[in-house]
Image (cartoon, rainbow, N blue to C red; front, side, top):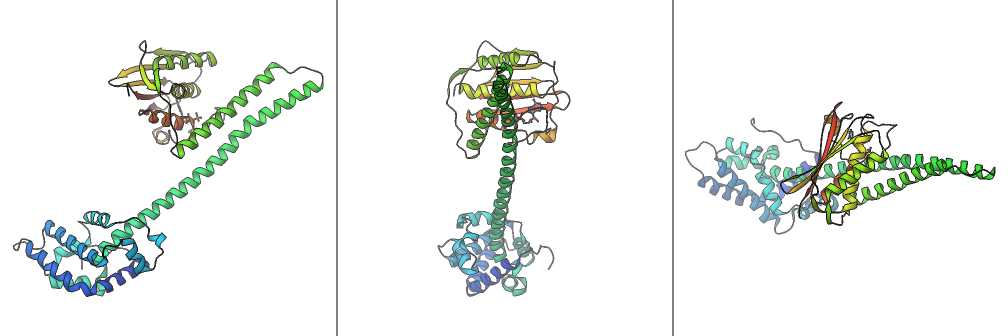
Amino acid sequence: MDGYEILPLDENTRNVLVELARRLRPYQDQLARRWEEAFAASAPQQRGLSDKSIQLIINTLVSVFFEYVGEGRIDDYLHEVTGLSEQYIESGLSYETMISAMHLYEEASLPLLMREYTDPPALMEVLFAQDHLYHNILILVASTYFGRLNDEIRSRAEQLQESYTRHEQFVSMVAHELRSPLSVILGYIQLAIQAVNRGKGVEIETLQRVLTHAQRLKRLMEDLQDASSIDVGRFGVRKGVCDVVAIATESARQLAAADPKHPIAIQAPDSLLTLCDIDRITQVVDNLVGNAAKYSAEGSEIRVTVRQLEDKAVVSVEDQGYGISAEDMQVLFQPFSRLYRQTEVKGTGLGLFITKAIVEAHGGSIWAESEPGKGSTFSFSLPIGS
Ligand code: ADP
């Protein structure tokens, strides 16, 4: 028989089909009768069946099948028939799901077969012949079921693998990131102790370095805490009225003071009020402005723009730095995405992940445009007056 595909089925599925066919055999007459009715309803002059009649027949067959299965869930039925563990077949499939899955199969092997066999009894013979089990309605039912099931199992396995890999990366990144500031702090404290033991005072620079690295550790711990609450869907913001222009200006001013190597230009109206979490939006702008400085050459300008676009406040941070390739753009906002594996530039790859979660928790969105070698612009929007 040409014209339709033999579905590749594993041994287990095949056994299920054989068993289903055996159990449905007593209903063959009933099926045939319904089938005849469906045929009678289709246009007699047509060779083969119209799509509408095919749909009708599929629905009829499915309803016979479900009458047989009864009110019970398909999961229970398959469990009983196959002996597969309930856990394995637990897919939450209901009659309605199955019917809608059936509709997706309009172009599957059964309609092709029906077009080929216009004589109901002959078709019934084919459908119920042991040799052609692959082509009967049970295939349709079971392959739908197993197709869904396999997809679900596959996607769960992929999710698990992904989360395992992320967990591994997470642990090694955390260990690495914690180790370096901690060793620096320990080193300086030892120096300070030796100095005191020798009757000397501790230099202010030593204390300053300890402070810098301790602050880095604290920031890292906060980022990790944020990332973990985002991961479990428990990240929230506390909104109040705030001026986005004031936030952006202060952030730019702070960077200019901390890192005078980059001239900063700001273009903004006098004020632009939104409902937002002032600390969190400050964190967002600090992160974007900080990245613009980190990932561009000394002396290159950073431009911060605030504007109103319809009912949104949009903040953009533009740099003339290294830029980001189209490929890297895909993973930019994912956790731990350090794109250049830079050794000299410090970071965890968590900043943009947290930034995105903050903006989205405000009902806004964030995006980036970039040209490698020329620079990048990161923008985010916040709804005004919500
Ligand atoms: P971090 O800066 O801590 O690595 P982020 O999540 O803030 O983490 O950024 C993720 C990665 O995206 C960075 O490691 C860097 O490779 C890239 N990136 C972020 N901002 C820029 C920018 N303005 N220009 C070029 N690359 C950037």
